[in-house]
Image 1: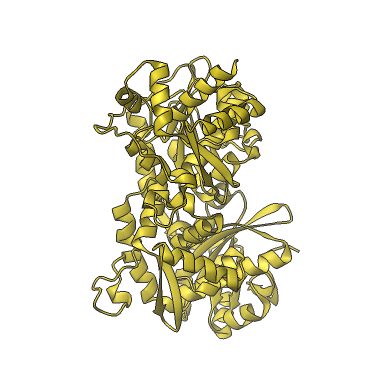
Image 2 (image 1 turned 90 degrees about the vertical axis):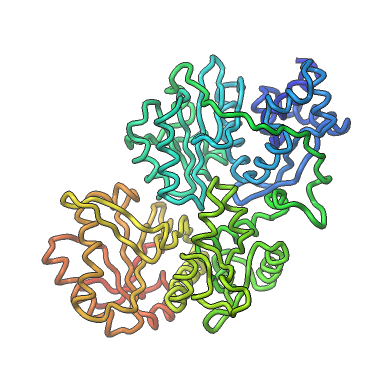
Length: 552
């Protein structure tokens, strides 16, 4: 392939796949990394392409390329079509650019997956983005096979994503489906939803798809067979497959050239994914999961020191993405409506629904902010029970800090609205609704747990009622199916006497039901002294404090 032919191919690929980086461009065009590097540098010198700096928690700092207005005109001349037709044929218009920039964190992960697929197949025949269908994108492999990609973001609710996947059953399907989940709980949920899809489906964690691990055995099937490599998954794709039909946008305007490097004093909101640093993006995700975090708890979860934390919080507030309010006896942080919209658009979630549930804005701006004056239903509930909310936040922050000091990894931490589990027991639908769910990794194996922070269960009858859902859950096969191992159930009381009474009730109830629940009980003073990973827990029939997690 000559230099001119490679440059023409790069221009065409950047029209179909805006914001690829150099390594991804090399993979999807089938060129060597060295040749792609020099070709893209020459195009940049001619001002046919420009680059934006980009990084996230999953993607290391890189430069992502897009066509300039001059590059679009050159490509239109090379292909012999009017520029207006070129803009409608590719996601290169001003409208499409805005959409892709708003989703850039998701776009980058899907491009890494596309590069891994191209490496397995030597190149890609084609690629197509979708705006409103259940699919995020479709990859066209050599020979005409098609593979759809669906990503479930961290803020995507279980019900909304289930409705999105059900739409797959109503339309035309590609030859196979690759589903990316942000964590293991979502992966298991998607597995059950995809069981029965008429085409092969494969699921993986988003962090694996964004790394070299995409080539390893990280892909799972809905039926739960052994993990597969990407090569094996692609080999199972059915020949052919259809591209979903999507109505073209009526508008296809020529995009204005972006500021050099994407960095200006003032930039529109759709450039925020470019301007934000990885630590700032992690902070936004944590505040989306745990509204009303105290700054000290946010610092523990991020693993940053106070000076760095102060700078990070100040920058997010200057960008209008977070709010800081006095609630209880300390200041607390939450996402602003602008921050909620940023994450909702990234994860293809309804902005209105996100604000209706999690907005921290005051219903009456003239009145002081209190739980009664918070517009988001979920945020209002958490602020109304701020002492309980802070206790749970303090536990997960202490757990994260102690895990770092002991060499243990926190693989997952889910807030209450993501920690619920629904299951069938004796023909009826039941649920458990813990205050948190998490997974630690120590000793080479996952250590899942549920957290219940009890303030009201002080009578034996109430204690038995609190335990009953877990007796039903552990009487089924779902704990191991959901998490790959038996999760521990951590119950914390404010007073030691309540913890002792609960241990007696738990011993009686588990014996009566004939169900073993891996239960660990503690109280606040013991936890404050020993920490969540220390000898702070008692089990029924075992009165000496012990470690709930074998991480040493």
